[in-house]
Image 1: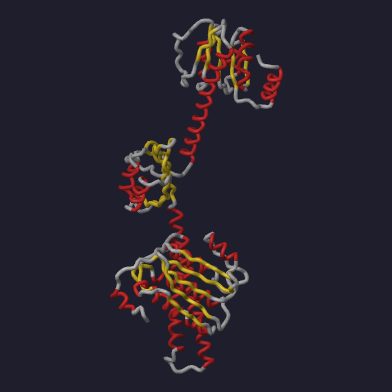
Image 2: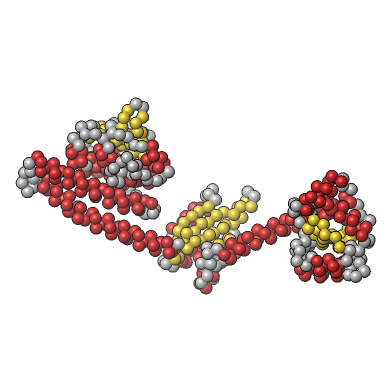
Length: 505
């Protein structure tokens, strides 16, 4: 028997709704009802007691019952007859039968949980509690499984994504056919074979590498029948420590891709239309500055030089806009080939000579590379030139007149290092923080147009080369900024190439 304090606590929990569920007891013996109620109270379930089985059926028809404890022998309706009617509205409820003698030979159909027991009178309270505890544990587990199953069915039904469950051989076990709903797709019962029929080669190679890797998920884009763009995520399903299958989620991004293609075309058209007249203007101004149409006086040369600087700045900005746009959309590709880093550095400086001259600055290039072959390795010369132009132009723009810009070439165990040092105002903490987060910030104090994009682009191109960009600004008591570009290099025998570019120049 429970103490009065324990009974008070349980009654309070029932009144406030702090119970796990409901247990139904039906027995035409009032004494047995009271005894079973006392026996089952420790389980923290609400107890529903009935001595009349017909009333119990009527009152509980719409009530969720977690366990029914039913007397087998009752005058108005025996326990087996009661259970058949009761299970019509409570198909998932387990039943415990009470009987004065064993009734195990009577098998009742319709117990889909298979969790029914017999309690023989007179019963031992501890034994009954153990029996009931086991059956309630089974019921709780079944409820959880049913809940998870219902959640999965809801996801399958209401999501617009294709969800596929596959075994270890990628045989499709289940899918909701939200995207692959055409008859020709439904014929394929293996995900790999489906891809082989309707997509290109690249996702298949990625998938093959993923299968044997330690990674738990893989994401890639596939194009189905050259018209349907699908963002596909493949995740390994694990049971304990064992890999048991795959969950595949496919999201239709065709509409987004089509919109993006329109934007891409527009950006490329705008930048092309801007660059074409600016190139013609720059060429004409260069010829004028060089005296091709007659010598200019100092004032005229200064004006033409300023116009040239503006033209070069405009070209650089349109290039940066397009490059930044491609980087952010994952479309900026690196094309490595053998190139001379010395020549690339010099070309970048030459490109900016009018800007540097207009501020009466001096660029000093110093190399610590011992062998000529150290200058030659594989990198994308056009993209690295873009990086250096951005870095050197920033150094010039934000440094006073009559100052030096020092460019140093060095090497560590696996990289060639190109450092650009200036003695300007430095880079703000806001800009550095944004670079760490792969964002762009244009500080209010900087009035130069586009001052926020150059370093972002330089960082991304360096990372695409599997290198990095390091920044030191106003530190160690030295005013100014030093940016160091790390480029991975592999020396090769390139004598003819070195001769072609005359690396000693």
